[in-house]
Length: 165
Image 1 (tube, helix red, strand yellow):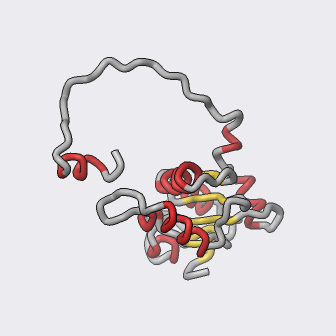
Image 2 (cartoon, helix red, strand yellow):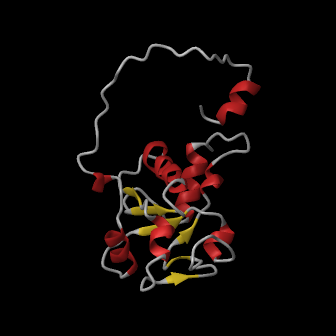
Image 3 (cartoon, one colour):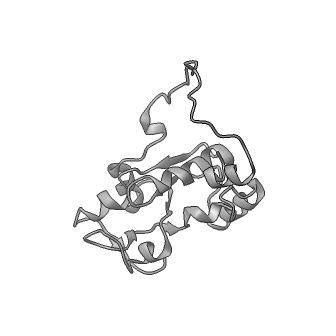
């Protein structure tokens, strides 16, 4: 339900508490989780310059900058760019047009030919950005670092930055 339940109700669409019979479907799984998920070692390679990729932190600016957050070390993964996932949406909660999204990501240097790894605090918000890039914009080389800043910030030897890149 693009736009959420509130939008659905606001448009006068039907709701029910009756559960329909659901017919099972088969969906193809990725050949490997490595096609979808970036792990800690892969992100380390990007930060160390051993793997060419763009890291995008999709948390709010105050979390990215290190001004607040629940982590013992605050800030962002060294070298990551800031792009709040909610900026991909219109005020009503639906996605912006493909043209608007393409322009947003082009301005970050994110193009279909580049490997992009999205992260956030725990991999949830970055899943939204993953979906936007992979399924709305058709990028084939995008991964979600689901360990995200929660994992990264808990390893004292890993570099963290504060402020804007």
